[in-house]
Length: 137
Image (cartoon, rainbow, N blue to C red):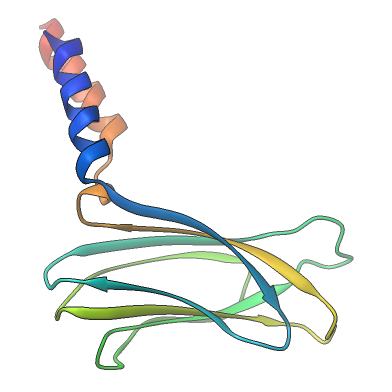
């Protein structure tokens, strides 16, 4: 029975999960943005990290996440990785913009952004473990 519940939960997650892992190429001469139209009262979680290989020094980023009306929800400068989370206050397009801070104008950096909204923000591994524990008692 517990296995059936886990399979059902996994199937439901696959049908309604709204999460996206994105890799972006960032040059030092431009800012790149990721946007998503989101309804109000939705949880949003983001993890970002520079994927680097062979650079003499690890590049650093600046990031800014804004609401549809321009309210700054997350802002960091000179970071290599980070996280943000918020609840949407109004429906509309939410925007995460990234730029590379370096003196090397020829550098191209790969960025991994894991952006999750709504049900995709749930910790399904923890829920499956709890279900297994409850079923065995």
